[in-house]
Length: 222
Image (cartoon, rainbow, N blue to C red; front, side):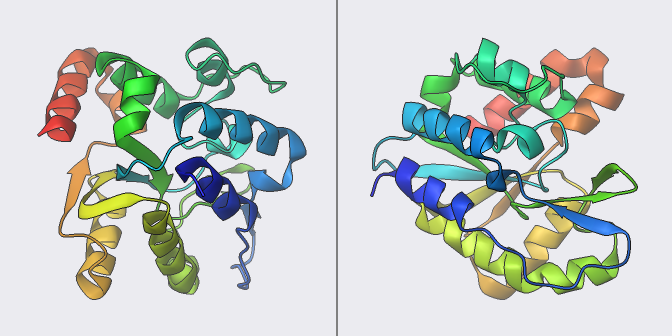
């Protein structure tokens, strides 16, 4: 199986069999046939080989990015305009996606970038509370109940064909803290390298965007 085929199998077979805390709902975009269709096109376009890649892990899908397209940090606009994959989704911009695709362009474009990196998530399924995005670490009971699912998901993402000498983490706060603690326990990777979270940069440090893009590029190419 190619990297693309293994990735598609992974996403199509995601399931979460835990009791969620009151008011929290799981978001599984891979149950949507239209999402699966664009995922097939995306992964076959960029990952249809047996080449190993370094893993970059985000937090979990959001409502306007991977929660729609099924592709981490890729909103419908970037999917169509940058990747050339037409899609039926509402063309709503998502801040994290805007940063990631500026970074990708800064590093030569989607084809060379995805030859070297695979972007996943600590929790490949997302969550919603009161109609808004909810992170896996925002509720301690949720975080604890998700540990077996997250642990298996990280192991599964490694088996797609990712290197284990190092893993990059989008989010140098709680996401990094959780992933580092988990890595200390299970030794998935030789080291976990924190990167600023794309949304944080776009929301609070946008005036310094070029500096952050260059900083992250240097870290990924080190």
